[in-house]
Image 1 (spheres, one colour):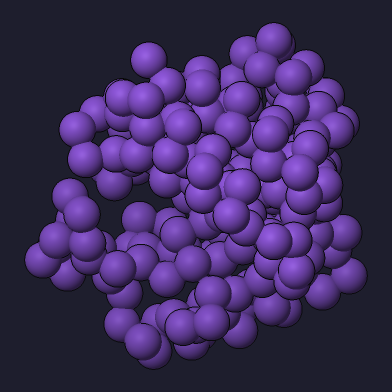
Image 2: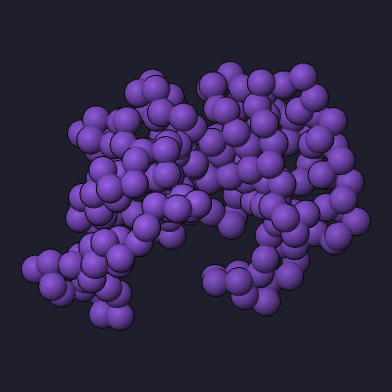
Length: 199
């Protein structure tokens, strides 16, 4: 039922369509994100509708990649400007801040997107578990080998399930040192590094 939300408190599909219909196309880009937008198949219809209305250059996706299938990849190809996948660590590294085997699954999702010729970026949340120079260098090497075009570096905030877990958050000094290291690391590299404004 397009008039009823999937979960209580969410907008229904028709309400979401109404919001898109009220929007104009001046100076904005829609990024569909938040958990995994592909968990609800109707969200794909919403993405395709927004793409037809505003143009694919104005539509982006940020997702973990859990639900990427060949059918979804075919439907979205040419309909979005880029897709960003969150990847904080190497596929073989255990990261307690992400679900089990998440880095491996995210890496496989990146490969699928690149195989289908999507413009692909990676979002990395910098935290205690990955702010190690060897890990960051190896992660960049992986992204280059896959053909990733953009690397977004974000600061960790103890919110959500990590509310008040401050031991995951490095000090400002460590963030400064790591930012300088990454800027040096990407010199002459085919990947652009973009730092969250708070860094």
